[in-house]
Image (cartoon, rainbow, N blue to C red; front, side, top):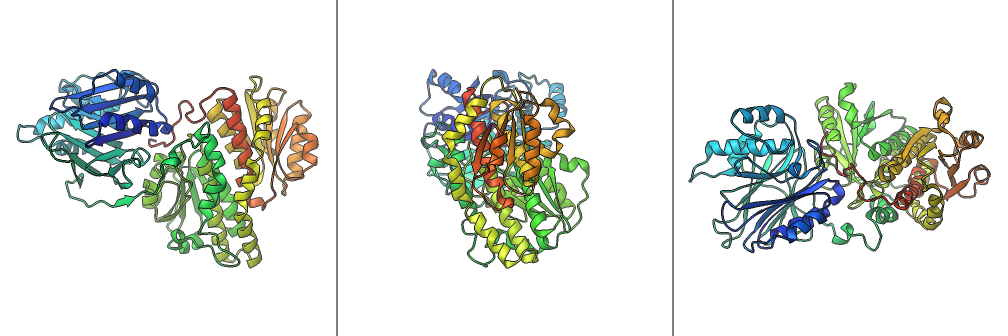
Length: 629
């Protein structure tokens, strides 16, 4: 949600910030803006626009750029307080023009702060909590300001002491040549270059300029300052916490390559990421999947393996697509280890007062590692004595740091808002954990251990074989892309029921078509009322122990005039006689079928949305990283 970019250094700052905002478009936004601190004091100009970053760039190109400018901050906004409009877009300037800032997160007590400011004579131009924060910092700034004391960081620390909520902020003031960054529960990274610094919500706008990055922790600040003359000296950086204690941050070397955040010849990032899955699933398995009877090599798991093995209960918490991966993980773990698993929406977990006991394990799944609901649920679980285990994609993310141990999926940067390769990475990681636990618990024998490992190792090439059918799948999708079909049912059983949920989610996320996922056995308990010639049913029906049951469910749909598309195992003839269309997947162990059955559904959703003219990479109203509750 939202994106922050800032720059201070020797290059043209506005260009770097606007280019960086383009890199962050995948996060979801409705407006964008840039503030440039010009060569002299008292010179901060703000440009804002509703809509795409391209609109902001066009407005900016019409302005005269001060060649002495060395500082700029920018933002892409995903609306929380106030409608998408120019007056609500960031950056926001305080009433008297002293403070300019950009902000990700939510200030929960902004109404209380606003009432105090109104009583002090402050007025407001927007409906945002961010403008309240800008004025609240100015209020504290004025309390300490003198010609010999313009310490912006003191004003920010004093102001943030009163703030309840989540924030990542970049702040400028009109009396100094500083950029101050601060964070709490919202990510902020600082790239340390050659006499320049790039600050952003994640590494994607930074890696073009430097690979040396500091990820701020909660309640930490960075102060970056030029000398009194913008043309003399280089910017210097210092780090403190909100108690004004000097800290020495960890500088991490980021291995991300630029081609990971480019389309690489594909029309969209989503299509590229779908086709990357043979490689990204293998990246998750590489170095962990061993030959023969050797145990899996999972260094990140070893230090909590005793807790996993003796856990009375495992909780899996996640949101959206990651929750679907968690449902698959539940079946994998329970089937192989007989350890009971509960799966919860992270957004609901805290509020149902779950029964968590010391010794229980909470597995948190998040692509970004910054999902606010998941982080809040983890904090509660830790207070109750649970061991925290993270499955995340983004190295150095908040959930990775909060966890006692965990596993990175190594899926690479995922730009498309609708998750594809991150999902299969999560499922692959859960398969590894399940197999490792089962082997150490002795709940599977050596033969089954070897068989499962071998089957998992073959998954990447089997995904590749499905992707080779893309054109045939697209031809099928074209028949369902017509306006006649505006409601879809997705149905599966057992471990592929979550794939029905995931297929429905993908379709509605990017095409805006109403779609529902159900266990096929529940069809007669309500959803069958929706069946007619305008409501297609998509069945996930590989050959497994539910095969005969799901075939009967398909026949019930056909008997009522419904159109049926089935995802089946290669060589299946019975399904072909019933369904209007079939898409075949290679045979694999039943526990691993979700890694294959999901691929045709990703391609179907992609093609239907594209044929309907939708922007599959940036679907409306959605954000890639949900950093507010």
